[in-house]
Amino acid sequence: MAKLPFDPERTLTYMQQLSEALRTYDLRDYMLLKSRIPGPRSKHKDLPEIDYGTVRVGRGYGLGMCVSYRFFKEDVEMISDLVHGDIDDHMEAKRKKTAARQDKQFRKLHIELKTRLSYGGACEP
Image (cartoon, rainbow, N blue to C red):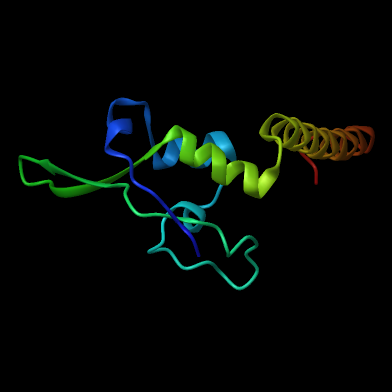
């Protein structure tokens, strides 16, 4: 695996949190963190590693230490391009697939309720 170089001049650019990067670019945690192990069915195991990313945040009042991960947006976008290609097309296809699945579930539920009502009421199964 190739490693992405850390450039200290970029430290003032926008940094993205792990959860935001995973949600926005439809990535998995093992794609960004080298400490996470991909599962047996996972794809894209040969992505470049990001050497930085861990920020320890101390919390007072007995809450202990929290670990926060932050990445440069350009590095997350580069990994997203390697995984999905065009992210806009990928997210649009994902939205359409989700809408079709929800529509199918709604139609199934609607037909089931319609059948129950035709046999004497919704209270009777």
